[in-house]
Image (cartoon, rainbow, N blue to C red; front, top):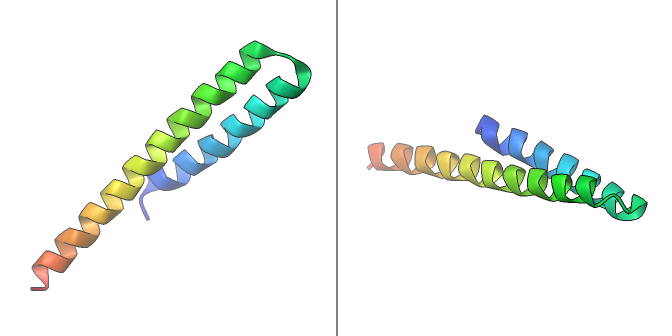
Length: 64
């Protein structure tokens, strides 16, 4: 499993938590920062998923 998948998922969770905390406390700065961090994490996780798929496809092509 690509490290970006794990790190991205962690950032998604951290960002979502920060975003929710910002909503609850009325801190729009924290809410926006959490939203940005969550989106960065989503992008990083998807990058890791694409890397895993590329490796899987490359292995499958070698086995033909």
